[in-house]
Length: 339
Length: 242
View 1 (cartoon, rainbow over the protein chains, first blue to last red):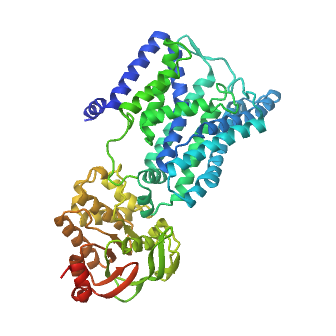
View 2 (view 1 turned 90 degrees about the horizontal axis):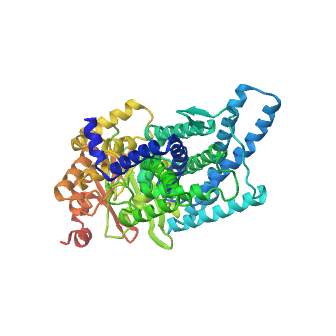
View 3 (view 1 turned 90 degrees about the vertical axis):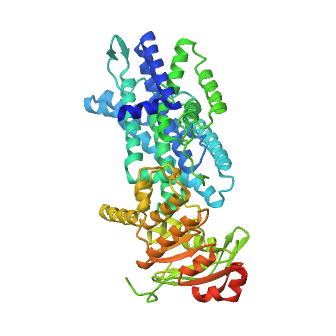
């Protein structure tokens, strides 16, 4: 039964793409070493968090969010201002337990700040627009997100300066040795953190009452109102979760991406690649595609040369939009009265 | 169940409503008692659907008041009226197309926290529409029009409503399926459900309902027993073409 199901799924477009990617990942790892696989997964986990938020906001609120990179930036900035003071305190008073959890405090602090920023953005930007008019909503809200992005980038520049704010590492200690490949502890731990976040989020969407109502709103807003779901509450929660996830990703990767005003542009565009590849609004497809895009980027860098890593995914996205605009995970089932 | 006509359930007083500058309802008033089966008929564009939408809270009246169980509900949003027990079955159904039939039904019981009651309601709906059991694992978006209508009504019933607002149940359905939907509404009314029905099929509607309102140009023109309405010369001329 299960094998039949897997076989049926593996002959679809999505199944073929996934299988090809797995084979490519295995071969390139065998060819170039484990480091490539680790890079793919670290990058993929981060991208998955970003893309999840984008897919969620697009699916639930119909907003094409272009300020998502700035929430990533807010996350890394928050972590930068939370972590070093604790670190300095630790240098004077060594404490094994605190030095283990200090990075976690920074990362979860950033998550919290991201969620608060999400609530503020929803209250200040989208909710007033929705009250005034929902005509031409997609275009208007898109323009608002671009404006928001400009404000946040320049706000960062004015208040915190343009220099790259970074830390050396979160977790001190020797790199871990896995089959003769040395991998920094930070990479391994952030990898697990992003995985845990993705899995928890998936369980939340799939099995909780609130998760179900988020899915309901994304499928039919009016239907959700009819069954008694508080639409404004769900919209607020969605925005908050989505910003929180981006900030979480930003904080996790502070050691790779120092915080500066426009740091969010790269994750933003990559996350959009992912969301377009997966099919707009498809939340779980976005997670799989995040790893595919990340693999594509890492493999291109390894085989074609650095500098090409954005050209190949971009070309792929353009081909995708021409030949299968609904994305590889785009669902075939569409309601008659879809907005 | 209370006897028919014992208690006022819904009272709409003089409401005005519209879209932007376009006014649709001009001082509509209606009253529905508990257990009644009332219909609202009228030509296209008269404001029948708008009346239902306004009662259900999907539109806000610009003036006037709506009393439900003695409480003012004008200005409530759609989810608030649903939690107060008003089930609204829209013309376009608004199902969750990527969820299965059963998931859709369970979403209908969203505001019911008690798991046992949810399951009882589910059994009740399956009993009313046996067709839905056969399709329980199917995605709502892949069902036929008639089945979707049943699902929409079933989802509305999942919240244990006291008032059922049904907008155009026969819209886009084959005659036989329309018959099915009407039958199930009658069954529900026989069990004591209060129903306000908006429908194009005037002959059929007047033959099953207790009382009818005729809406024209956003105003209530007539309010009589359905049997009297079907012999009313005005209704005959305008709707029945006799």
